[in-house]
Length: 183
Image (tube, rainbow, N blue to C red):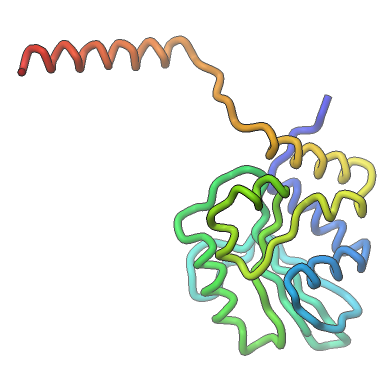
C-alpha cells in the first residue's frame, strides 16, 4: 500500500534532502537562477510572510561562514489550488526582505503536471518539479515524492454520498416546484 502524502510531509522530505545533500540545495538555488556561495543551509518551516499575510512553506537560507548569501521562499504544492493572492504575498515578502540578503527569490516546488497546468505558477520567480528531486531521494522519502507525483497526475474524483445527492436532488425539485408556483 502506498503511503498517504501531504504537503506537510513533503515539506519534511524537502527539509531532510536539503540538509543531507548539498546537491539538492544547489539544485534549488540553480532553479531560482540565483548565484551564491554556500557552505551550509538552514530551513525554517511555515514562516510568516514579511509585509503580507500567510506563511511560506519553507524558507531556505544559504550561508557562507556567518553571512546569509541567499534565501528562497518556497511554496510546496502537490495538487491543491492557490489561496487568494498567494503568489503575490510571496512577492511582497521577497521584496520586503530584499535589502537584508544579497540574493532572494520565490520558488514553487510541485510535480511537473501541476507546474504545466497552473495559471499562477508564473507569479513565482521560479519553479522546480518534484521529478528533479526524485533521483536524489531514497527509501521512504523517495516513495513519498513518487506518490505525490502520482497523486498530482490523477485528478480528484469525489465519491458520491447518497444522502448528499438525495438532498440536492430534492432541493432542485423543490426549486422547480416553487418556480412553477410563483411564475
